[in-house]
Image (cartoon, rainbow, N blue to C red; front, top):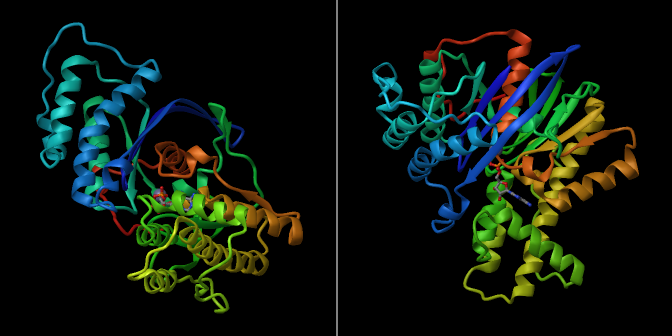
Length: 388
Ligand code: KG4
Ligand code: ZN
């Protein structure tokens, strides 16, 4: 099958085109093109993502990105004669997407419609206005080319983001179940028990801020740009390398609570009080970043390792934007060498940690291969709070 997958749940517009084949119950993938257009620079000026602006950016970016993705996949074909295509039967999808509508018309004037066997699109969780851009794009292509469209859960996408490696081809390995997954992103912090693909049980989650959100907010307090995670991480590791003395002690919320839940807003508030009306040198700020990262990583490791022991899992998958954090990865590796050498620990490659369409496509295909169900188009709607 040749598949197009689409991700627009937050501030990355991402598209992937790949071939997938089922061989002996395993799925083999061959990626033709995978491109992501990040709006991070754009949102940097506002210090965060405003859904309406993000929606407009997706509407402007998705077709130019589609053209590039098709070109890389050698599927972009210019039209020989310019005959106009009737958009009446997709007007219900495009009327609410003015930028997308204009760009699609331009595309159709110049290029032939490509043919896929399946279109996979994120339907949640995420920002509903931005999710709709991807969904309406998927439905439009689906109707115009008579291609089935299936929805894909963004969090399931993060879980399977650990499988692609640098090569264009990869397959889903046979890992032993059950698996535990720690999902850490800008919108989520959850511990998920995976009985089998498709059977997920959330055993813990944040009661307030997501861990990535805490990184972003603390970065803002320290005057670092958005997204804050990579900045905090950079300065924290500088403070560690230099052995700079600590100037603050931050709390480790819920470290000893007997459940698998998290809370990060208290650490952020503690940083707020520490930094209020004070000026810090670059080095002093770096030590606050390090103390913040230490606090967060300590809580994440403690709760996750507790769950690993209680549930007796064979493998751990850490995924989501924050899984790009080197210190978090190092600390998990340390736990494995010191305590649990048989545990398989999987982190995504750096280019797969953030939001991307390939992970959405993999999750969608795993689902489709299991139940072979194509929902009616009307049943695919943006679900901001969609759960696993
Ligand atoms: O998964 P993701 O790309 O988007 C959501 O679905 O939310 O995650 C984005 C989050 C941001 O909060 C960003 O600051 C954080 O991931 N992040 C990091 C690092 N790189 C990105 N947090 C800590 N350390 C990093 N190296
Ligand atoms: Zn995400």
